[in-house]
Image 1 (cartoon, rainbow, N blue to C red):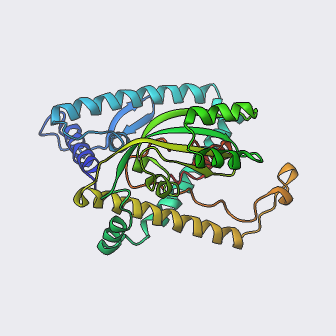
Image 2 (tube, rainbow, N blue to C red):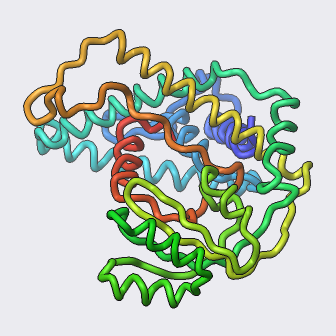
Image 3 (cartoon, rainbow, N blue to C red):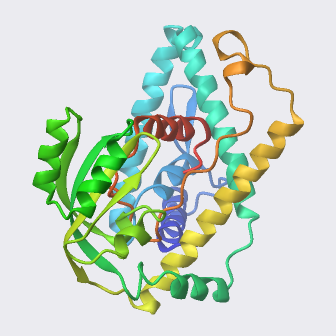
Length: 324
């Protein structure tokens, strides 16, 4: 149990005890879990606990906890008042509201199932964690922070060949830009500073292999990208600091793979019929592949901007399954 959740649990217990203790100490009435009544509706201590469990309460003292709990309670009261008015105005019967409620219900159930699957995945062993550290020196022992220049152009015929020729000739980014303009090739360019863990894992080995002043061309379905390492600096991550992050990364990776495999199996065992414009002829034959792995560190913007289709897929995946 992490510190935040443990603290929230302790604090929630303190709230319950405070509520029970209110009034005459000689009162022999059974302790109640009701924090407030709004008309005929009750707001429970459990509801307050749920909100606090999602709040960073680490380091809070009992007085601060009580203040936070009362603030949460007041917000829940306001929420209940709004719910009562919405019901009185029959908004709960509105087709739009009904569809949103159903969407929320589906999302909650899907998330619960995904969490159940993830909880059953075996944790990585110490050997697995250590092996990941030694197998990925570019992320840890040989980690670098790169100052890069980028030119991104559509993946159209001849673009990759043109950029590769320019790189092989040792042209500067400015000269490459001028050459692309001369050929009426649309492109975007710019510079950035990226740490190794901010670069997609499938691209990182290519960038790591470059020395300062060298360039490479990276091809993707939607775009061709020229990356030049203007300068870089070593910034190794000690093993002791890296291992906890690696453990979390491998755990998430395994959970994602397990979820993807399970959904693929469910698809193969279930009759799915696409209708209208989503007819089977235009539908994918299998479940979408899991999202590409990212380095075990704080997520950040990658060197290569994702294609539009990749962005749309990420939004759809997040909205439907909440697997992230």
